[in-house]
Length: 577
Image (tube, rainbow, N blue to C red; front, top):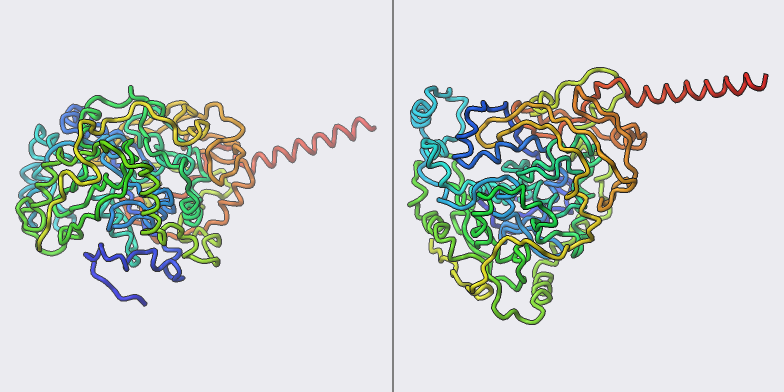
């Protein structure tokens, strides 16, 4: 067995999962996804307060079900040394632009940092001060954010979007280690980024004109059941074979996202989206490497500078006594200051781009990271990924039995599953300051055929979903109800999916859909159910398809078809007589 390493060894490349993919114990590793379910609907009286704090838009995000196989495939491509995903077409990453548009969080402002204390007495006093009640000792969670939430007027001054992105980066860095068993963090952001940038690998969107953009896939599993059963080897192979034109570099131009649905306060902060800067959230320090993903901002990509070394600040955890002011901590103060000077690090176009800079970059990229780009070959020929869904979305076949029993509400189902550091140069050689800083793109040439842009078209009528909050602990329990609009015979842009559109019967009571296509039933019935991830309050696994409350189940249709067949035979026999 490989040697055990400490949690803080997140930068050691030899610990990366790709070095263990040829090991039978690791090549089918599926991380547990700690994907929290939004709680109950907030009182309408707090809506104005949410708008003041900047949390209103994120509070409107509904339930976006996790796709564990896709998350695991992305983790395999993430590299902590560069803070980017390594794909055959080059490096890419989740940026502040994605946070602002997918979650609707504020991105410009003060760093989210301050004092942390380890004593229970401190959290008890803080809770009594803010809420009038205090939790029991066994019910505590870390209270580091509470002091920043005392004054509602001041809450909006912080860059909550950069803190959110820092925690996603930290989760990806930890999960990329071979011996990691779970991943947490804002997985809705990761999934939304992947589905927007790789539309041919996304489920069918249910609300394409909603904001935040994460709501495009609110309750997607109700209308695209087959997508739930795609496995790790499917996404791994798709990434191996990814070609230029399939990845959407400039994803938020007007021909993809209607600018009228984006609130003005979101666009007002766009100036910082391209900054190559540190991301700060108390002990968590990560690196926003936009200089390595310039194409995502419409710029020419050249060979980037050396990877940024965050030293001891990268991998710091809050286990044990941590009575620190992270603003002045020796390992963190330099990075806090770097964020406050973010305007000096905004990307700008090269004044005189070199000849064929992208070719130079791709040659450099393949020569340096070529061994990281084809992971299916590392796994080997004997890929057992097709045996069982057991290691991935294996726990979702409970609802595929032919039964007329009523189903519980979707929300009830979800609750059950429940040293010396040098600052980077403000003007690195590859991006000298000029008079052309990054601004959000309004027009661009599509990077893949327009017929594949099904995710940006209104293929469904807008549902009647309620309001939700994933950040402050509030949400809506209103049942989302939507009907299928006109569907083409073939769905362009889908990858390795059945081109036929399966027939469905809708269940108003449960909001679900039951397929009457026998082929889809046989696919789903092969999944194995393991009840090992049940933790109340968290959706640690992808929920099983619910049994339809509609009496028109596939078995009923088969019986009806048999009766019709017998009736036709009787009529023919009578005519002969």
